[in-house]
Length: 198
Length: 198
Image 1 (cartoon, rainbow over the protein chains, first blue to last red):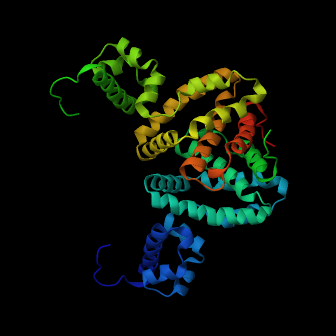
Image 2 (cartoon, rainbow over the protein chains, first blue to last red; image 1 turned 90 degrees about the vertical axis):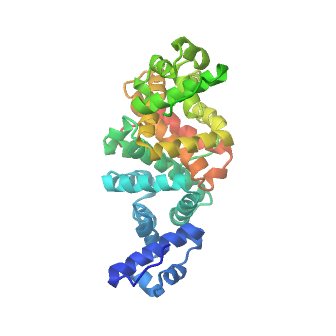
Image 3 (cartoon, each protein chain N blue to C red; image 1 turned 180 degrees about the horizontal axis):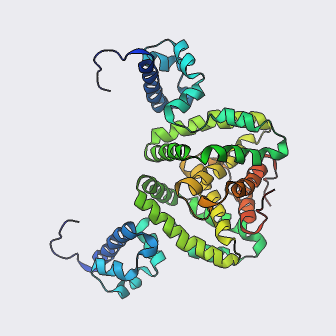
Protein backbone atom coordinates (compact mmCIF):
# COMPACT_ATOMS: atom_id res chain seq x y z
CA UNK A 1 0.00 0.00 0.00
CA UNK A 2 1.51 3.29 -1.07
CA UNK A 3 1.40 6.23 1.36
CA UNK A 4 -1.30 8.75 0.64
CA UNK A 5 -0.94 12.49 0.74
CA UNK A 6 -3.96 14.20 2.17
CA UNK A 7 -7.37 12.70 2.93
CA UNK A 8 -10.00 11.42 0.57
CA UNK A 9 -12.80 13.93 0.51
CA UNK A 10 -16.38 13.31 1.58
CA UNK A 11 -18.71 10.35 1.61
CA UNK A 12 -17.54 8.65 -1.56
CA UNK A 13 -13.96 8.70 -0.29
CA UNK A 14 -15.06 7.17 3.00
CA UNK A 15 -17.12 4.49 1.24
CA UNK A 16 -14.21 3.61 -1.02
CA UNK A 17 -11.86 3.46 1.99
CA UNK A 18 -14.25 1.02 3.69
CA UNK A 19 -14.39 -1.19 0.57
CA UNK A 20 -10.58 -1.13 0.34
CA UNK A 21 -10.26 -2.11 3.99
CA UNK A 22 -12.89 -4.84 3.57
CA UNK A 23 -11.12 -6.34 0.56
CA UNK A 24 -7.81 -6.40 2.39
CA UNK A 25 -9.31 -7.86 5.55
CA UNK A 26 -11.38 -10.54 3.77
CA UNK A 27 -8.31 -11.55 1.75
CA UNK A 28 -6.05 -11.60 4.79
CA UNK A 29 -8.10 -13.59 7.31
CA UNK A 30 -11.02 -14.93 5.25
CA UNK A 31 -14.72 -14.13 5.42
CA UNK A 32 -15.63 -15.88 8.67
CA UNK A 33 -12.91 -14.28 10.78
CA UNK A 34 -13.33 -10.77 9.38
CA UNK A 35 -15.35 -8.47 11.64
CA UNK A 36 -17.08 -5.22 10.83
CA UNK A 37 -15.19 -3.71 13.77
CA UNK A 38 -11.78 -4.69 12.38
CA UNK A 39 -12.71 -3.45 8.89
CA UNK A 40 -13.88 -0.15 10.36
CA UNK A 41 -10.63 0.21 12.29
CA UNK A 42 -8.60 -0.49 9.16
CA UNK A 43 -10.59 2.15 7.27
CA UNK A 44 -10.23 4.59 10.17
CA UNK A 45 -13.97 5.05 10.67
CA UNK A 46 -16.57 4.20 13.31
CA UNK A 47 -18.14 0.71 12.96
CA UNK A 48 -21.57 2.36 12.93
CA UNK A 49 -20.62 4.10 9.68
CA UNK A 50 -19.75 0.77 8.04
CA UNK A 51 -23.18 -0.58 9.01
CA UNK A 52 -24.80 2.64 7.85
CA UNK A 53 -23.24 2.46 4.38
CA UNK A 54 -23.20 -1.30 3.80
CA UNK A 55 -25.58 -3.03 6.21
CA UNK A 56 -24.46 -6.53 7.19
CA UNK A 57 -21.08 -8.20 6.74
CA UNK A 58 -22.63 -10.28 3.97
CA UNK A 59 -23.78 -7.15 2.14
CA UNK A 60 -20.37 -5.55 2.61
CA UNK A 61 -18.71 -8.62 1.10
CA UNK A 62 -21.04 -8.50 -1.90
CA UNK A 63 -20.22 -4.81 -2.42
CA UNK A 64 -16.47 -5.36 -2.00
CA UNK A 65 -16.14 -8.55 -4.07
CA UNK A 66 -18.64 -8.09 -6.89
CA UNK A 67 -20.49 -11.25 -5.87
CA UNK A 68 -23.59 -11.06 -8.08
CA UNK A 69 -26.29 -11.72 -5.46
CA UNK A 70 -26.89 -11.44 -1.73
CA UNK A 71 -27.20 -15.18 -1.10
CA UNK A 72 -29.20 -15.15 2.12
CA UNK A 73 -31.79 -12.83 0.52
CA UNK A 74 -32.15 -15.06 -2.53
CA UNK A 75 -32.54 -18.14 -0.35
CA UNK A 76 -35.07 -16.46 1.95
CA UNK A 77 -37.06 -15.41 -1.11
CA UNK A 78 -36.93 -18.93 -2.57
CA UNK A 79 -37.92 -20.51 0.74
CA UNK A 80 -41.29 -18.74 0.77
CA UNK A 81 -42.71 -21.28 -1.72
CA UNK A 82 -43.95 -24.78 -0.92
CA UNK A 83 -41.39 -27.55 -0.45
CA UNK A 84 -42.28 -29.24 -3.73
CA UNK A 85 -41.54 -26.05 -5.69
CA UNK A 86 -38.19 -25.22 -4.14
CA UNK A 87 -35.99 -26.54 -6.96
CA UNK A 88 -37.82 -24.83 -9.79
CA UNK A 89 -38.13 -21.58 -7.87
CA UNK A 90 -34.43 -21.56 -7.03
CA UNK A 91 -33.50 -22.24 -10.65
CA UNK A 92 -35.84 -19.48 -11.88
CA UNK A 93 -34.68 -16.93 -9.32
CA UNK A 94 -31.02 -17.48 -10.10
CA UNK A 95 -31.46 -17.61 -13.88
CA UNK A 96 -33.24 -14.25 -13.70
CA UNK A 97 -30.11 -12.81 -12.08
CA UNK A 98 -27.51 -14.70 -14.11
CA UNK A 99 -29.04 -14.22 -17.56
CA UNK A 100 -27.66 -10.67 -17.62
CA UNK A 101 -24.28 -9.70 -19.09
CA UNK A 102 -23.24 -7.72 -16.00
CA UNK A 103 -23.77 -10.71 -13.69
CA UNK A 104 -21.80 -12.92 -16.04
CA UNK A 105 -18.89 -10.48 -16.09
CA UNK A 106 -18.90 -10.38 -12.29
CA UNK A 107 -19.04 -14.15 -11.97
CA UNK A 108 -16.26 -14.73 -14.50
CA UNK A 109 -14.07 -12.20 -12.70
CA UNK A 110 -14.68 -13.82 -9.31
CA UNK A 111 -13.93 -17.32 -10.57
CA UNK A 112 -10.82 -16.15 -12.40
CA UNK A 113 -9.48 -14.50 -9.25
CA UNK A 114 -10.41 -17.47 -7.07
CA UNK A 115 -8.70 -19.97 -9.39
CA UNK A 116 -5.49 -17.96 -9.53
CA UNK A 117 -5.23 -16.85 -5.89
CA UNK A 118 -5.54 -19.32 -3.03
CA UNK A 119 -6.55 -16.59 -0.59
CA UNK A 120 -9.39 -15.51 -2.89
CA UNK A 121 -10.55 -19.12 -3.13
CA UNK A 122 -10.48 -19.47 0.66
CA UNK A 123 -12.41 -16.23 0.95
CA UNK A 124 -15.05 -17.33 -1.56
CA UNK A 125 -15.45 -20.74 0.10
CA UNK A 126 -15.80 -19.09 3.52
CA UNK A 127 -18.42 -16.70 2.20
CA UNK A 128 -20.45 -19.42 0.50
CA UNK A 129 -20.29 -21.64 3.56
CA UNK A 130 -21.23 -18.88 5.98
CA UNK A 131 -24.12 -17.50 3.97
CA UNK A 132 -25.65 -20.03 1.57
CA UNK A 133 -25.03 -23.12 3.69
CA UNK A 134 -26.19 -21.69 6.96
CA UNK A 135 -29.33 -20.08 5.56
CA UNK A 136 -30.25 -23.12 3.47
CA UNK A 137 -29.50 -25.60 6.24
CA UNK A 138 -31.65 -23.67 8.65
CA UNK A 139 -34.49 -23.50 6.13
CA UNK A 140 -34.34 -27.23 5.33
CA UNK A 141 -34.03 -28.13 8.98
CA UNK A 142 -32.55 -31.61 8.40
CA UNK A 143 -29.26 -33.11 9.55
CA UNK A 144 -28.07 -33.70 6.01
CA UNK A 145 -28.94 -30.15 4.92
CA UNK A 146 -25.28 -29.05 4.51
CA UNK A 147 -24.60 -32.04 2.25
CA UNK A 148 -27.76 -31.32 0.24
CA UNK A 149 -26.73 -27.68 -0.03
CA UNK A 150 -23.31 -28.65 -1.36
CA UNK A 151 -24.91 -30.86 -4.02
CA UNK A 152 -27.12 -27.92 -5.00
CA UNK A 153 -23.98 -25.78 -5.22
CA UNK A 154 -22.30 -28.32 -7.50
CA UNK A 155 -25.16 -28.14 -10.03
CA UNK A 156 -25.41 -24.35 -9.80
CA UNK A 157 -21.68 -23.74 -10.19
CA UNK A 158 -21.69 -26.17 -13.10
CA UNK A 159 -24.60 -24.38 -14.73
CA UNK A 160 -22.73 -21.07 -14.40
CA UNK A 161 -19.60 -22.60 -15.90
CA UNK A 162 -21.32 -24.44 -18.75
CA UNK A 163 -23.89 -21.80 -19.75
CA UNK A 164 -22.08 -18.53 -19.07
CA UNK A 165 -18.32 -19.10 -18.85
CA UNK A 166 -17.34 -22.00 -21.12
CA UNK A 167 -20.56 -21.41 -23.11
CA UNK A 168 -21.02 -25.02 -24.18
CA UNK A 169 -23.60 -25.41 -26.93
CA UNK A 170 -26.52 -25.97 -26.94
CA UNK A 171 -26.95 -25.25 -23.22
CA UNK A 172 -25.47 -21.76 -23.66
CA UNK A 173 -28.26 -20.78 -26.05
CA UNK A 174 -31.13 -22.89 -24.69
CA UNK A 175 -34.33 -21.02 -23.64
CA UNK A 176 -34.20 -20.15 -19.96
CA UNK A 177 -37.50 -21.99 -19.40
CA UNK A 178 -36.03 -25.27 -20.64
CA UNK A 179 -32.97 -24.92 -18.42
CA UNK A 180 -35.13 -24.00 -15.41
CA UNK A 181 -37.21 -27.16 -15.92
CA UNK A 182 -34.23 -29.48 -16.40
CA UNK A 183 -32.03 -28.10 -13.64
CA UNK A 184 -34.95 -27.29 -11.31
CA UNK A 185 -35.79 -31.01 -11.05
CA UNK A 186 -32.21 -31.75 -10.07
CA UNK A 187 -32.19 -29.04 -7.40
CA UNK A 188 -35.53 -30.31 -6.09
CA UNK A 189 -34.16 -33.82 -5.63
CA UNK A 190 -30.96 -32.54 -4.01
CA UNK A 191 -33.02 -30.42 -1.61
CA UNK A 192 -35.83 -32.79 -0.65
CA UNK A 193 -35.59 -36.08 -2.56
CA UNK A 194 -33.85 -39.41 -1.97
CA UNK A 195 -30.03 -39.31 -2.12
CA UNK A 196 -29.21 -42.72 -0.69
CA UNK A 197 -27.12 -45.32 -2.44
CA UNK A 198 -28.92 -47.47 -4.95
CA UNK B 1 9.43 -18.09 -31.07
CA UNK B 2 13.16 -17.68 -30.60
CA UNK B 3 15.48 -19.15 -33.23
CA UNK B 4 17.06 -22.45 -32.26
CA UNK B 5 20.66 -23.37 -32.67
CA UNK B 6 21.13 -26.98 -33.64
CA UNK B 7 18.54 -29.77 -33.52
CA UNK B 8 16.98 -31.46 -30.54
CA UNK B 9 18.48 -34.88 -30.26
CA UNK B 10 16.62 -38.16 -30.61
CA UNK B 11 13.10 -39.37 -29.98
CA UNK B 12 12.35 -37.35 -26.85
CA UNK B 13 13.33 -34.15 -28.63
CA UNK B 14 11.04 -35.01 -31.54
CA UNK B 15 8.15 -35.87 -29.23
CA UNK B 16 8.59 -32.61 -27.35
CA UNK B 17 8.73 -30.68 -30.64
CA UNK B 18 5.44 -32.28 -31.69
CA UNK B 19 3.79 -31.35 -28.38
CA UNK B 20 5.10 -27.77 -28.71
CA UNK B 21 3.74 -27.55 -32.25
CA UNK B 22 0.42 -29.05 -31.17
CA UNK B 23 0.00 -26.57 -28.30
CA UNK B 24 0.74 -23.63 -30.60
CA UNK B 25 -1.58 -24.90 -33.33
CA UNK B 26 -4.49 -25.74 -30.99
CA UNK B 27 -4.16 -22.32 -29.36
CA UNK B 28 -3.93 -20.50 -32.69
CA UNK B 29 -6.81 -22.03 -34.64
CA UNK B 30 -8.71 -24.10 -32.05
CA UNK B 31 -9.15 -27.85 -31.74
CA UNK B 32 -11.55 -28.44 -34.63
CA UNK B 33 -9.50 -26.66 -37.27
CA UNK B 34 -6.14 -28.09 -36.20
CA UNK B 35 -4.97 -30.99 -38.36
CA UNK B 36 -2.35 -33.60 -37.65
CA UNK B 37 -0.77 -32.64 -40.98
CA UNK B 38 -0.39 -28.97 -40.01
CA UNK B 39 0.98 -29.89 -36.58
CA UNK B 40 3.50 -32.24 -38.19
CA UNK B 41 4.56 -29.51 -40.61
CA UNK B 42 5.01 -27.06 -37.74
CA UNK B 43 7.14 -29.62 -35.89
CA UNK B 44 9.12 -30.39 -39.05
CA UNK B 45 8.28 -34.10 -39.02
CA UNK B 46 6.29 -36.52 -41.15
CA UNK B 47 2.56 -36.80 -40.20
CA UNK B 48 3.01 -40.56 -39.83
CA UNK B 49 5.40 -39.90 -36.96
CA UNK B 50 2.82 -37.81 -35.13
CA UNK B 51 0.33 -40.67 -35.44
CA UNK B 52 3.01 -43.14 -34.38
CA UNK B 53 3.84 -41.26 -31.19
CA UNK B 54 0.44 -39.90 -30.22
CA UNK B 55 -2.32 -41.80 -32.07
CA UNK B 56 -5.38 -39.69 -32.83
CA UNK B 57 -5.81 -35.93 -32.71
CA UNK B 58 -7.83 -36.39 -29.54
CA UNK B 59 -5.00 -38.32 -27.89
CA UNK B 60 -2.48 -35.70 -29.03
CA UNK B 61 -4.62 -32.96 -27.48
CA UNK B 62 -4.79 -34.88 -24.18
CA UNK B 63 -1.00 -35.29 -24.19
CA UNK B 64 -0.39 -31.64 -25.09
CA UNK B 65 -2.97 -30.04 -22.77
CA UNK B 66 -2.91 -32.20 -19.66
CA UNK B 67 -6.62 -33.01 -20.06
CA UNK B 68 -7.10 -35.76 -17.46
CA UNK B 69 -8.95 -38.34 -19.57
CA UNK B 70 -9.45 -39.38 -23.17
CA UNK B 71 -13.15 -38.47 -23.36
CA UNK B 72 -14.22 -40.70 -26.22
CA UNK B 73 -12.64 -43.74 -24.52
CA UNK B 74 -14.39 -43.01 -21.24
CA UNK B 75 -17.71 -42.57 -23.00
CA UNK B 76 -17.30 -45.73 -25.06
CA UNK B 77 -16.49 -47.63 -21.88
CA UNK B 78 -19.53 -46.17 -20.09
CA UNK B 79 -21.81 -46.91 -23.03
CA UNK B 80 -21.23 -50.67 -22.76
CA UNK B 81 -23.70 -50.88 -19.83
CA UNK B 82 -27.48 -50.94 -20.07
CA UNK B 83 -29.32 -47.67 -20.64
CA UNK B 84 -30.74 -47.60 -17.10
CA UNK B 85 -27.23 -47.77 -15.61
CA UNK B 86 -25.60 -45.07 -17.72
CA UNK B 87 -25.72 -42.29 -15.12
CA UNK B 88 -24.29 -44.28 -12.24
CA UNK B 89 -21.61 -45.85 -14.43
CA UNK B 90 -20.56 -42.48 -15.79
CA UNK B 91 -20.36 -41.01 -12.29
CA UNK B 92 -18.35 -43.99 -11.04
CA UNK B 93 -15.94 -44.04 -13.99
CA UNK B 94 -15.19 -40.32 -13.70
CA UNK B 95 -14.90 -40.30 -9.92
CA UNK B 96 -12.33 -43.12 -10.18
CA UNK B 97 -10.24 -40.82 -12.37
CA UNK B 98 -10.86 -37.55 -10.58
CA UNK B 99 -10.41 -38.80 -7.02
CA UNK B 100 -6.65 -38.68 -7.52
CA UNK B 101 -4.44 -35.69 -6.68
CA UNK B 102 -2.70 -35.70 -10.08
CA UNK B 103 -6.00 -35.44 -11.96
CA UNK B 104 -7.12 -32.61 -9.71
CA UNK B 105 -3.90 -30.71 -10.34
CA UNK B 106 -4.36 -31.14 -14.09
CA UNK B 107 -7.99 -30.05 -13.99
CA UNK B 108 -7.27 -27.00 -11.85
CA UNK B 109 -4.48 -25.98 -14.22
CA UNK B 110 -6.68 -26.37 -17.29
CA UNK B 111 -9.52 -24.35 -15.78
CA UNK B 112 -7.16 -21.64 -14.57
CA UNK B 113 -5.66 -21.28 -18.04
CA UNK B 114 -9.06 -21.37 -19.75
CA UNK B 115 -10.50 -18.71 -17.45
CA UNK B 116 -7.58 -16.36 -17.98
CA UNK B 117 -6.99 -16.87 -21.72
CA UNK B 118 -9.83 -16.62 -24.23
CA UNK B 119 -7.96 -18.73 -26.77
CA UNK B 120 -7.52 -21.51 -24.21
CA UNK B 121 -11.23 -21.37 -23.41
CA UNK B 122 -12.10 -21.58 -27.12
CA UNK B 123 -9.72 -24.50 -27.48
CA UNK B 124 -11.21 -26.34 -24.49
CA UNK B 125 -14.77 -25.75 -25.71
CA UNK B 126 -13.86 -26.99 -29.18
CA UNK B 127 -12.25 -30.09 -27.75
CA UNK B 128 -15.19 -30.91 -25.49
CA UNK B 129 -17.68 -30.34 -28.30
CA UNK B 130 -15.74 -32.41 -30.82
CA UNK B 131 -15.07 -35.35 -28.55
CA UNK B 132 -17.57 -35.67 -25.70
CA UNK B 133 -20.57 -34.28 -27.55
CA UNK B 134 -20.10 -36.18 -30.74
CA UNK B 135 -19.39 -39.52 -29.08
CA UNK B 136 -22.20 -39.14 -26.57
CA UNK B 137 -24.71 -37.90 -29.16
CA UNK B 138 -23.93 -40.82 -31.40
CA UNK B 139 -24.30 -43.26 -28.52
CA UNK B 140 -27.62 -41.79 -27.36
CA UNK B 141 -28.92 -41.58 -30.91
CA UNK B 142 -31.62 -38.96 -30.20
CA UNK B 143 -32.14 -35.51 -31.67
CA UNK B 144 -31.80 -33.82 -28.31
CA UNK B 145 -28.58 -35.71 -27.46
CA UNK B 146 -26.33 -32.61 -27.70
CA UNK B 147 -28.59 -30.73 -25.26
CA UNK B 148 -28.62 -33.72 -22.92
CA UNK B 149 -24.84 -33.95 -23.18
CA UNK B 150 -24.46 -30.29 -22.26
CA UNK B 151 -26.66 -30.76 -19.18
CA UNK B 152 -24.46 -33.72 -18.21
CA UNK B 153 -21.44 -31.47 -18.67
CA UNK B 154 -22.94 -28.82 -16.41
CA UNK B 155 -23.31 -31.29 -13.52
CA UNK B 156 -19.88 -32.82 -14.09
CA UNK B 157 -18.05 -29.49 -14.33
CA UNK B 158 -19.91 -28.37 -11.21
CA UNK B 159 -18.92 -31.53 -9.36
CA UNK B 160 -15.28 -30.92 -10.29
CA UNK B 161 -15.49 -27.32 -9.14
CA UNK B 162 -17.35 -28.01 -5.89
CA UNK B 163 -15.55 -31.20 -4.79
CA UNK B 164 -12.00 -30.68 -6.06
CA UNK B 165 -11.37 -26.99 -6.78
CA UNK B 166 -13.45 -24.87 -4.39
CA UNK B 167 -13.62 -27.87 -2.02
CA UNK B 168 -16.99 -26.99 -0.51
CA UNK B 169 -17.78 -29.00 2.60
CA UNK B 170 -19.24 -31.53 3.10
CA UNK B 171 -19.23 -32.56 -0.58
CA UNK B 172 -15.45 -32.30 -0.74
CA UNK B 173 -15.06 -34.99 1.93
CA UNK B 174 -18.15 -37.11 1.24
CA UNK B 175 -17.58 -40.83 0.47
CA UNK B 176 -17.27 -41.40 -3.27
CA UNK B 177 -20.13 -43.93 -3.14
CA UNK B 178 -22.54 -41.33 -1.78
CA UNK B 179 -21.57 -38.82 -4.46
CA UNK B 180 -21.85 -41.44 -7.19
CA UNK B 181 -25.38 -42.29 -6.06
CA UNK B 182 -26.54 -38.67 -5.78
CA UNK B 183 -24.95 -37.37 -8.96
CA UNK B 184 -25.46 -40.60 -10.91
CA UNK B 185 -29.24 -40.17 -10.67
CA UNK B 186 -28.94 -36.67 -12.07
CA UNK B 187 -26.79 -37.84 -14.98
CA UNK B 188 -29.23 -40.68 -15.64
CA UNK B 189 -32.16 -38.26 -15.94
CA UNK B 190 -30.17 -35.86 -18.12
CA UNK B 191 -29.19 -38.74 -20.42
CA UNK B 192 -32.44 -40.68 -20.69
CA UNK B 193 -35.16 -39.15 -18.51
CA UNK B 194 -37.82 -36.47 -19.00
CA UNK B 195 -36.48 -32.92 -19.42
CA UNK B 196 -39.62 -31.15 -20.60
CA UNK B 197 -41.13 -28.14 -18.92
CA UNK B 198 -43.40 -28.85 -15.98
